[in-house]
Image (cartoon, rainbow, N blue to C red; front, side, top):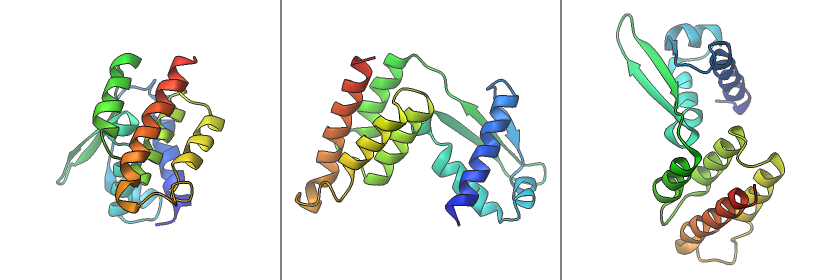
Length: 156
């Protein structure tokens, strides 16, 4: 699926949140798929990659004739959220894609700036970690990410 279509669907869902004062929204997968002329599985792709726990969302799904998807924006204190991110989302090891997802979520919430996002992505990239054995990259990536997040939060 084209990233462009994913971006458009994500933007549409975020606009629904904004129009609903950031309260839970309900959508029907099939209707949304028809609206964007794509398959329901492509809607699932957007929901699982752009509206997951690491990005601060809970997606509840009910299948069947009157099936719907309910999306909640999780609200928590920054300290609780930071502890969860460091311990659960990052842990001892993190893949490049999960690290990028997490950074985008922090950027979306205004925790880090767009400039910080780009710098952090560059530091965590496989190109930057090229001289590190592949077996250790995700561990080093996790350590770097934790330090950068803690530093950016402390400086605010």
